[in-house]
Amino acid sequence: FDPVRLVALLGHPLVRAGAARLGWLDQVRRLDLVLRGPGLVPGWGGVSARIAERAADSKGRGHAEAEAIGDWWGDVAAGLGTALAPFAAGVPAPPSVLLGALQAALGWLTGEGAWTGHAGRALSELFDRWALAKGDGPALVAPADFPAMLADLLSGESVRPPYGGHPRLFIWGLLEARLQRADVMILGGLDEGRWPQQQSPDPWLAPGIRRMLGLAAPERQQGAAAHDFAGAFAAREVVVTRAQRSGGDPAVASRFWLRLAALAGELPEARLDEQSVVALAGMLDVPPGVSTPAEKPHPAPPLAARPDRISVTGVDQLARDPFAFYAAKILRLSELDPLSSGPDAKWFGIRVHKFLQDWQTAGLTEAAFDIELAALRADPALDSLASAFWLPRIEPSLRWAAERVWASRDERWPVANEVRGERIVDGILLFGTADRVDQTADGTLAIVDYKTGAAPSAKSTGEGLNSQLGLLGLLAQEAGLGDLAPEIVDAFEYWELKRDRKKDVDGAVKAIRGQKPKPATAAAVVERACEVFGDLMARYLLGQEPFVPGDTGKRYADFDHLMRRDEWFGRGDADDSATEVGAA
Image (cartoon, rainbow, N blue to C red; front, side, top):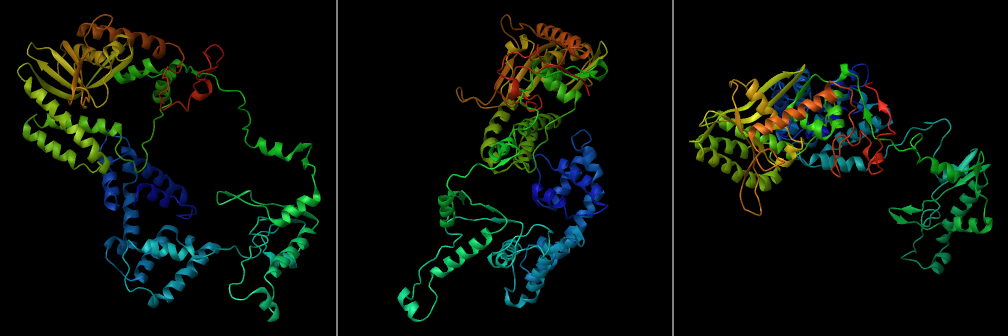
């Protein structure tokens, strides 16, 4: 039960058709949200475990959805699980038993929907023939082989609509077309080898011997095809068509087509309301109303619609790309994780943070480190690719971080992890969470942020594009982080947990210190972050400045399609000609 196939099955149009379908689809959509992201164990047990895990995580995404579908999924698992028990057993069984399990599952999902209509009747007849011929097939079939057997049986069936399915449209064969007439006749398939059909020579009898025996010549079928063509071509209105390509290769026009084109000469192009058919066909590819490219968006919602709370990472997002902040925090849009996805960069970062958090909670000992490392290796979200490539690279980085903590225990020691702080500034709630807080020997604090990718540079901090650690320092000094009392922060560090191929090291520490114009001291980092936050707050949160897209360069961002970036990027500054967009 792969998530993509499971959601597709439960959302099939035949499932729960009728008055109960809308409520059923609401539950299927909730299940779709819960199953997104890596770490899903295949099977009924894995889906149930994911729902229970999300329901227990009150802070995680999908908490409300998981609680809402708990009872519903229990009914689904019980109903389908009971019907499909022979498949779940995993042992060879008679084909009739597996067929009966499939029929029971279809009945539980669709009621009579799977057996109605001409397609349903054809399926029912196939199953009946299979049940009657059960003694002619294998005695036992492995559940894993049953889908291939079913696919072979279904591939040999043709489902045709009943006679008179449409009052005005008919699809006839050659014999039916000889006996009937219609106002408009469409002669299709005039390609060589199809009409007339390709004739192969008789491998046993020469043409002369066939004539002596009184047998019909092979060319007679071509004559009959020409007779059928001439009869159908004499209708009141005729459309003759052929395929220019067949199976990906160019198709050759039939001799009927070539002869007709030679006799007719250059026919005038058909016209409809003074417009050529070619021009009308070309207009299908031109969407109406988008001939003018979009301008650079300037959404300017009213003050009441602007948020009165912002995180320290949200400040960096607002500084880099105001439109992304507008889409994420005001429109409340976010990218969904794909269904049935493997571990990605985001998951790697979250998992490393959890590893270090759990290790610090367990006491920062070597034994606790080994326990957490074993849990990481056994994480069900790690697929074969991540286990082969990512895990061998991250383990040395984690050991490097542990050895660095142990080596500096006389100078500083971690006292808190994943601690939250908040403070109200001019009516705006500023909040944030520190990955780790260390207490130094002189009583001051050091704030550490873990990075599994490249850490921001001190230069970008000086330019106001990375104020996260500086604002965390402000919260630590003014209001305290977690249970820690307000204290001076004397160090800000990014710990890069990745291998440096040039220096062959498994991690690096980037302290936000440096030469001018970069911040030279921790106090300067906090002061610069306060300046950036005050400016952004005055312009965007307390003011009326529009949220224009930032300069993301060639990097694709989550909201590029929403801002229609490809239509205006590279055409110069469109700020003056753009129109403000309201908050609606």
